[in-house]
Every structure is written in structure tokens, then in C-alpha cells.
Length: 146
Image (cartoon, rainbow, N blue to C red; front, side, top):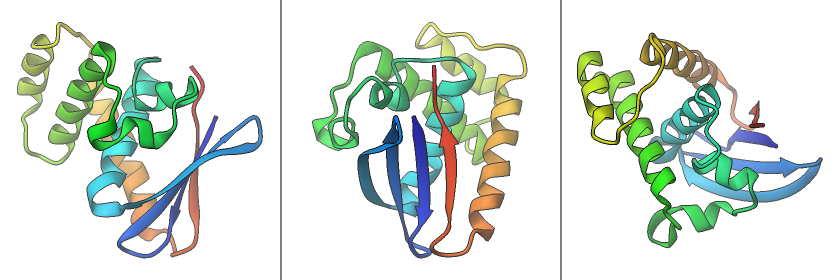
């Protein structure tokens, strides 16, 4: 599955999903609200080889609209992954100390490899740097296969 993030303007972006070379789904979103969160999902799910997260569920055949907002088909696994993603994003943004991240994961009975949060922060920062300097109209492509 290919995930294409296209910068429409400084405020919005479009996510286009391709499966087997065919356009599968597309949505335009507010960048300030969604870009970092969706990127964090991507990094966390790929790093931990998670099939039940947002991108994993899209790879399994769900559409983005099914997994957003109040229509979200939350599963127990997706809730746990959302908890990990939220904590990862909080550390990246400086809202949560790293030590608290590991304590926070105990709430969902989840453990991650040593150095996980540091690795995620570096990966996220690298993409954010690319995104911030990406010209309007250009895209960043990610491959997702678990």
C-alpha cells in the first residue's frame, strides 16, 4: 500500500491511498490537526509491526472515513495503538517526559523495545523537516506493508 501526503497549501493536505497501483481512497484534511498524528501512526505501526492500527486497518480494507471521528470502528487493538501513538506524539511535542511515556504504556499493558521513543522522535522529526520545506503541490510517499 502506498500513502501519498500532498501539501495543498500551508493549511491543508490530501492523503491518497493506492493499493496494487490503483487509487483506493482519498481525503483532504487540516494539516495542523492531522498531519503529525497520521505520521506518528505510520511510524509507530511500521516500527512495531502492528496490523490493527489506523494504517493497518486501511491496508486490510477499511476506508479512512470509517476510521475517523465519531464513525470510527474502534477495536480494542486500535484503542491500544491510539494510546501508544498519543503518548509518542506527546513526547515528540515536549508535552510528556520520556520516563512518563514508559509509565503510560503500562496503562494499556504494552511494552516497546529499548530506545523506541528516541527512534520515533528522530523519524518523525526527519519527516517533519521534509514536510516543512516541501513546496505546495509536492508530495511525500510512504510504503506500508505488514
